[in-house]
Image (cartoon, rainbow, N blue to C red; front, side, top):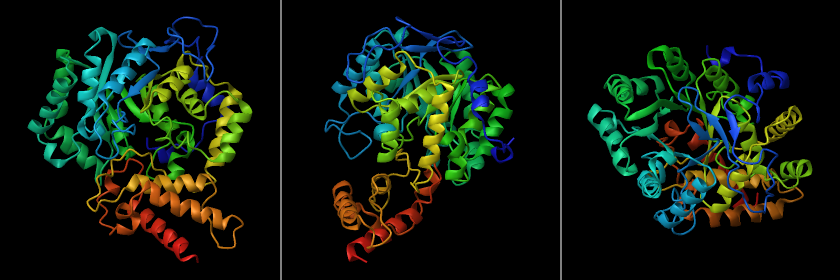
Length: 467
């Protein structure tokens, strides 16, 4: 069944039916240590032994509800290693992995494509310093380029992952980015079926070198529906989906080619397939919200971070195995540990509050960029994510104006132009886009990137000309 046929949106009552007895009493949800609640404040120490765990239904493995996404590892310059050309700060990665393990995190998610190809190696170095039974490692067959669609190319990538991670088995292995591309169904066939690679991975699972086999879904719902229809054949152990309080019912409205998380989660739940959650913060969009939305969060719960609300939403569903967070700095890790150490599940009133937040956010015409950087590198050197994210930032701060007569025109004009030059070098700005469209087919959010870049460039030119 395609998402377009699933017309009825979920009510608060239906939400709690899906959640079941979500929380400390739900099946498969346990916490270690004091169950009386999280005594740590947003600025206090984080006690060990508080992590919330979910039970893998097929094996009984206890998996931390917080999963460490190794997609945005710190660079030696302090930024995410996905940006620029700075090397990964291995010492900081080691410290963060040590701290995560000490506080109960045991799921680490990486890919050959992350951090310009350096994530798996950095993850392997950090984890190899700990006993193998203390962690679960997840990685992906990121065979996006046609040159890797051959059987030899894909199997070579799989074996390289083993070597880089310094392991002789992979706990969670994924077919990466199912549904992406200009021709999603044809690309799935080429990447996994026609070359016999999926059959090979099934053999590896039977041999124990892959413990659990699943896929990460982006894009075309027909591919998702097909793979679930073939669940009896492949017996998927888990599926990774995008789920957050904005995408729960608005993903399709944001972009007609996307699919509401309500449908994705529901299809997995009714088959008993555990869900691994990506993009709980929409690439940071749900932590960098508009000022009026921040005020709503702080009025309701002053000590809680804005990001913690999104993580609580994702973690409150009982068939969620783990929620991934790409953490660049120690404070990101610490804030997430407070949220899941232990989880304070959503109440019905909390759910209604988040839905009102989502409704309010939909009133702003933000560009649904998650800063995943799958559109990069641009052959003309344009920094696509930085351009889109700067526009969203200005929109959320009320620094997008329609007329020179707007009350805050002068302030907004200066904020946009000065911030644009600071965040995006001139040679990488939208004015250099020629519309080749090599970027859009790789975008999981299905953004028409050239159209957005041309729109932003036209807006910038109007600001510069002061008209």
